[in-house]
Length: 296
Length: 269
Image 1 (cartoon, each protein chain N blue to C red):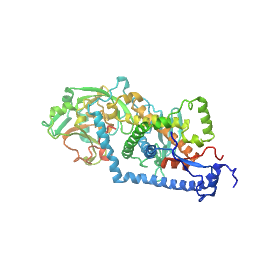
Image 2: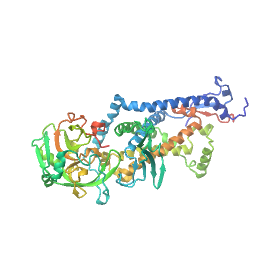
Image 3: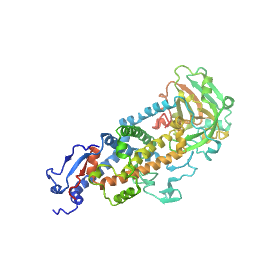
Image 4: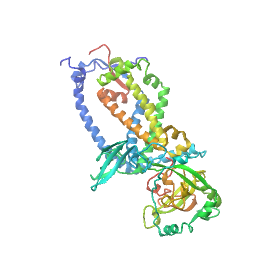
């Protein structure tokens, strides 16, 4: 990769913050292509709204099953139950053999008027806030289409521009156990790459982004499509791939949960490794790195 | 300033103030967004735009379903031990009670509308026609699935017997159950499908379930099975099959009981 012309910020007028003069010289390097930036933010919008409308749809039947069928009389591996005792609602989460009292959050939570109501996810997590499966579906399908088109643009564009190969595919050396272990230790110490090394994703980032872009997000689309009886007759292979519609619904939930976990870690990492620099790079494309061999 | 102060620490201070400001801003925006979501849901223009997704879904699924592939058929051992009954489990009308008491001997299926020969078919006459048996999955819009064995007459047989008139586009099913429990007929269950689904080989008018007579809770004496769509399309207690060029004149104008209440007419997803 040829080095692009760098803008050096080191000798900028000190401006508001005098200590800027103490900073090591920094240069802004191109970090994210327009393709990555645009699809990233569309994805943020879609994922947020899909998650919330998905929680609304889940609430219509807050139970998950494995296999070809699954309804009220069948064994659910996860359920958010609403129980009535002493005149008020109680929420209990059943996860395999576990039962957890979750009143206030899962199974039973307060409505706008402050009364405990039976519902899977609470109203602040759903679109609309009140129970309305039909509206939840409208929102979900609209943003599902946008999400799928956006994802397709990203995948095709990423292949054509060699983004995946250049930026995301780990090298053999990076995958060496000793290197991986070192990266994990560095991450745990919040010791982020500096200088030239900060130009590239580290191997943990590469593996995580690959898993998100090539497993979890396509998995969301495919498990979602498997829940469509129309698609199931057009592409019956989907049912074999996921082991039945109830299984696909369970996996849809699990993949979404994994994506929520990813987003949480992603946001924490963005905050810890320089929120403005990261935000700037995802908006303007330019990322500041310290000029090697200076300061520190 | 002491140059030994860690670079990171020095950089953070003014940014922390800004970060706090941003956090407040984000929290405010979040609150607005949350309150705004309900307002957005209720905005007619937004709702209209989102509802248009159905056209895209229908067009793309029709592209894939043009060759009329069958819905998956399962084996006897895949049948749900208990098939959940949903919606009405007993129509409330005195007329239905009378028919049920007479074991549906007096029941007749009316076939009318844009047909050459309006029909009035007894259960025995329907059972004497060509039958089809299928073990299929019933997918409720709520998210649960149940597998059952259905036996009935292909809808195409009934339509061919009546003979479609030019202009026929939809088949409308008028049912005996008043799901909204209104005093007039506006709460009566009804559904509609187009001719592509009506002539699909697995689209049957079922009178048998899991090897027995169709139970009352599942729509006795006759229910629709349109296997590539969700549960609410599977009209129960079918009394009349109307062939029409449109469904907009009926009740809410959206082509079905749940469609009139916001659900998609095309329920293949």
